[in-house]
Amino acid sequence: MAASGHATDLSADNMTSTESNKTKPNEDGVEEIIDSYSAIRRKKVLGLILYLAILVLAAGIGMGMGSYKISFARVYEVILIHLTNLGDGLTSLDMKVVWNERLPRLLCAISIGLGLGAAGAAMQSMMKNPLADPYTTGISSGAGFGAILAICTGIAFVSGPYGIVVNAFIFALVPAAIILFLSTFKKPSCTSSTRCSPTSC
Image (cartoon, rainbow, N blue to C red; front, top):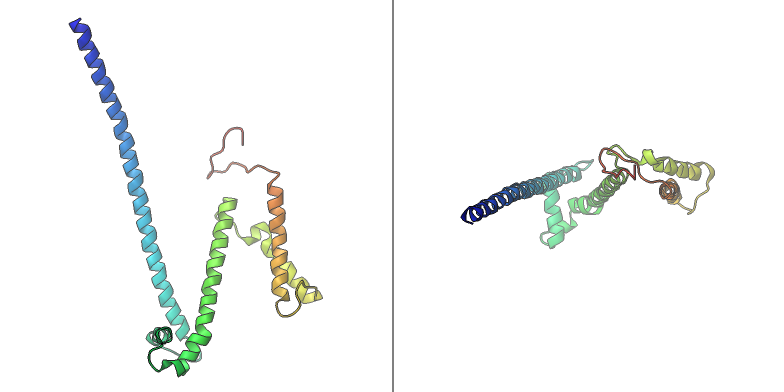
């Protein structure tokens, strides 16, 4: 009886040690994942701060360039004066050039860049191809065809100066709609970046 009890105790100790050995690698793996995620998050935050600093620097230099030269410090001084309504800069020529002419163009360029970047990231994500662009799906070709149609024949959905832009936009949607329609009839193929089950490949 004593021998059997001793054997039972040994087996229980072995099971406990085995379970502890199994949980240790899992805990280590979780800690590694958390550390790697934290490192990636820190890199993203630092990258965002760096990009914002570059944007502020480039914006100040860009708004100071042109036929009428303005210094970097004066550009942001004019913007600060306009936002706070302090000083006599509201009636100066610098105020008219920076606030009324160059700042709207800069904000428009930033908005267009953000839109193009988001559209490109979405397209590359959907197609699972880091080299995907509007030419891959025919969107650029459709937009070009719509613009040429409006320029050469005068056929446009909207009359006036915006007819070419509206034509290009509408004809760019045509190949995108066709691709989305055809994609509903075909399953996605397996790639190196996706994990597919044997039945889906």
